[in-house]
Length: 311
Image (cartoon, rainbow, N blue to C red):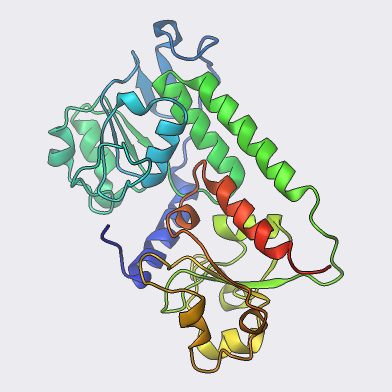
């Protein structure tokens, strides 16, 4: 799969996070009928989007939304996804772009619902003028945002019950994973790497909130104390080495072929605790860059890694 450069990747993540505050829509208080998949549940309204009947030609231009739609049982209603939606494997991948969406190309798919993560080039207005319903599901900054987006998608697709069940399972799984975390007098520290250019995340991002949930301290926080970098600062090797993190989590294993060996080979990194203790954790780039159902797998990977360190 083609990947963005680390710089563009970080910029896109930051843009998504910044858009959240201005673009997230609140769900209507109307709830569909029990079971969530019958015609009686419609019409439904989420934010500014009202659907008179269940959508059967959904176009998803967000890899996270694609994962959510399939996870709640709406996969058969999805007729096209963007070129970055690689999970689940059966998703109908196309050459449509979620980064630079083209209204004409999208309209050519004759969708009855389009799901987007970003309003790039005012694509929402363009599609609205074409009478195409659009749901904006921007980058989450908390797990509650993820649960809300699942609920919104469940409601609009006629799968509210399935979305609610998935949310409950995610909450239960995460609670189970984190309930017996060791009590530490001093928090373990970490560095999360988006790319070899050393872009990272702060605790104010979605990823940062996941690490905080596991009780870890972020060495990148001082690099964006004023928030002007949107939670995605670029660190220097000197800053990382001086911070001496207990863990290095790599979210650039697919895009940039980074692994524990490449990190160990970096000049000056041999003395970092994470290197000395073999605590360099290779993550799945996709799981670590999306805020959908597989966030449970991310929590599990972090918990499993840190649990090996004595309290």
